[in-house]
Amino acid sequence: MILAYLLFLNFIGDWILQSPKMGKEKSEKKSVLFSHIGIIFATLFFGGIIFVNPEKMFLIAVINTALHGIIDWNIWNLYKYSIKYRHPDKSMLELKQEYETERKYAIDPFFGYILGFDQLLHVVILVISVDFIGV
Image (tube, rainbow, N blue to C red; front, side, top):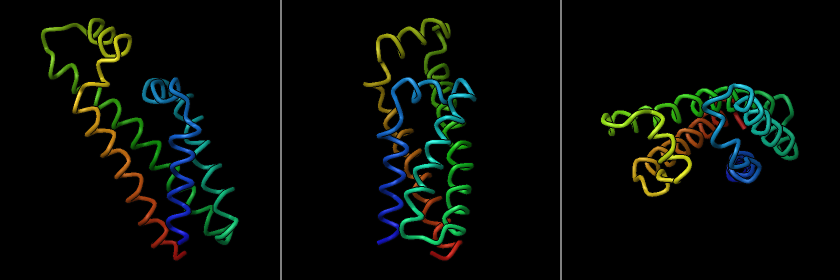
């Protein structure tokens, strides 16, 4: 039951409290990434201490926050590089226009695969850290 609750907190921090601008810029600007993972930490820690020992919850929140940041920075840059790889005939400026302004990523199946893989990694890390810390 606690794991389900922590997964729900992760959903709130990673989806509900993340603005569209933050979602776009967290792989471009480290300051935005740090804001995002600060939200993840606060949501997990302060929401989690309701049911979990504060020391254990602090460790879970730190582990998940650090790895969340590493995943988000790298996986979304991987997606952006994949666009260039799949469209070698276009400049980065053209691709930025198509994918951001025209929202072409919304119809790109690879975007959905990356999004799903990103969430899978976050869930697996949360599950492993909860088991490792012994909650």
